[in-house]
Length: 279
Image 1 (cartoon, helix red, strand yellow):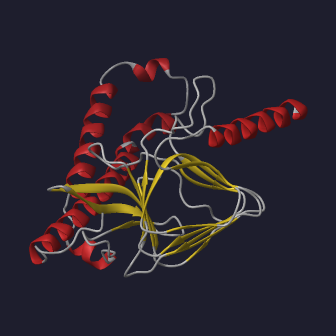
Image 2 (tube, rainbow, N blue to C red):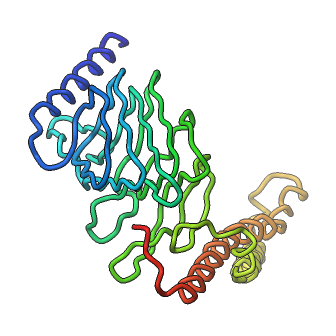
């Protein structure tokens, strides 16, 4: 089995290198085998492999537009996840952005930039250093072994405003969920809390009441006759509303948190009508 696995790996790597050699379309795809620097606008047309010994440096202010579909895909092999573009780091990747001039990886526009490319995969022996970066629509979280600054964020959800996309919800470098103002700054937790709704206090009691009604009408039948167990166990059904209430509260709390972030962002948009969208 191991021999078969290694054979498949070799074939796929060889196929990927061949794809790089015969790719003559627009943009960049395939294998980076020597030190390379990206700056300005870059179009990533397909899967990218940073080979061992090679370093790709992405300078501050660089905007990398990622193709919706891997240009190196073959009909007999799925290269990446569902033909999405991925960046495999077996060498070194240095994203040298800054808060004032971040590096932005963003999907090619086709109506929504949410979750449309795979992201980065860090191989054993590879290294990934990132500072001041926005990864818009990446399905995979940043590798845990990557060296990240506080200004690296993955945007998993955006809002449309006119012709621009605004960051809304995402993850920081540690993978922790967070919300953004329209300019990309983080919405403080206390602001989200102050703007939350009260769905949890509507959903939880309603769900508990409905479950209690269900238990009551079920108890009117003859189910006790057919259940050969202790009266204590049978009567536990009357406690069903308690976990139902808890689940309803947790679900409502998620809705309220999202609502609080949306309200906070809407207020920010009214206060900053002339800001420049980051994407």
